[in-house]
Image 1: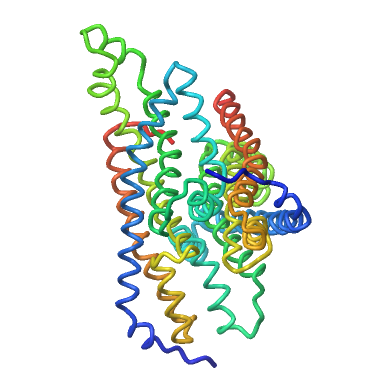
Image 2: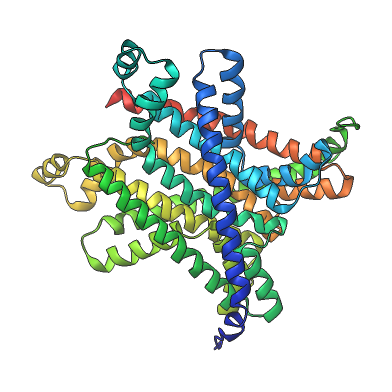
Length: 225
Length: 221
């Protein structure tokens, strides 16, 4: 019978904490960039001008359709050679996940903006607002409320996806767990602890998301996906 | 920007790419079949009134939905062999991780689909003398499956993308072969671009199919 021994894992708690901090850092940066870039992509995609909407649509399709790990390898191994730049694992991770989340967020923004009735636009234009003002003051505030559940769900997916950075040797939680497992010869305990940490953090976010979603639903807003 | 792109060095390794493609498709098929069938069982257990089914199924779903699939895969590869006296191959570890993850996600799709069927259908089936199992098989599931098709197709696409994670445990699939070609020929640009294009070409039509299914469902309801 195998004797469990968590002591070697807890002796390396500092490394795990550092790893978790790095996981949260990549998630937060990619989420922030992804939201801004996603809105920009959505607006380009909705543009009546083909030379704007078509490239935006292409970026969205490519990043939604190819596997995240392939994207990450491309940005880490191929892009530096094409562009002649130095690429750190952190920059590669943040670039990949920002554009990838932007592609998903863009579709959420687009669906949200399109879900707002035409009358809202017409009313805003009738009282003399420009299209931009109508978007900023009338359409987006209503659309964002409807989009919140989809955003939350995507953000949780993003946090799980960040584990891929371990494969390009960025010191996230999974990478640190792997290092500890190799150092201590305790893979069972280390990977179990790592899985539990992920579960606690992600489950907490999920519960928060569900509560927020229910509150919005009570408010009578319909949601888009 | 100096050097010209040279895809010849990638195509010289077509054999390796084909071996990778076979590995990807094999893993995909195993995970899809295992994941969707196990998911149906878990979904039914989640829907059941009995706590003996309901609680374990809920714990399973929450755990596998709220942990990253790569962590699950590495756990099966590095940790499980210590608990059980078995050799866990990279295929087995990848298949276990992705299948259980898919089961948890599809369980929620099944549950949602089954719950979306009106009570009247159950009442009607009972009135003409059908039992629970018969009603589920002949009345509820056939209607629910139609509503679940877009979500299930989406899951299948996700599973196909997830197979690339198996490269982390050195299972021979497309991305793993791309890595190999890139390191042997020093051509990461061409190698990884080729892999990305292969995935795009396979998955893009499937993504379009989900859009068609979604639209058709909206029109029918």
